[in-house]
Image (cartoon, rainbow, N blue to C red; front, top):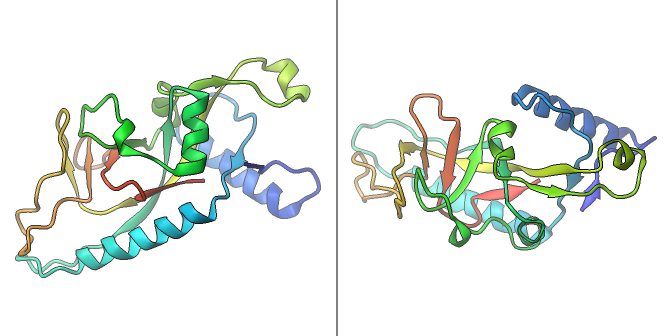
Length: 196
């Protein structure tokens, strides 16, 4: 983990500003005290490979003739333990650890940091002036998430349903809480999201 808030480093300062702005736009309503970048080459390569596989499947011959696209969205994820945070940094998001499965048995990501904060764990900042002002803080992930076609999920759904318009019976890439404009996305492939 590398801090993105580094005094005198222009690139790190720009990264910090971007993360802080995204935090504020996501409706959190609290102060972002620190951000750490996850740098795991294996996870990055696996994410890129999964993106290619999923994009190839979206080029399937669909009965309605519409073109499908795969997007990358920046979404929030909370986990209930510090060990869970470390596991995600090392191994990525693991759908087998899913516990609350209202919209499907997979990994959950939200457009709102405040929603993900409900599932976040308490952590302590490294010794600094911020640590004295804020002795207890919570940690959430910002993640790049591969989002394709979505369908509204249901309790413990796994796998996602087949697309009725797919000639070869491909399944939806994601389930979600509602359509249109989902606020919660569920992924079903372990490398479908990348902790940032």
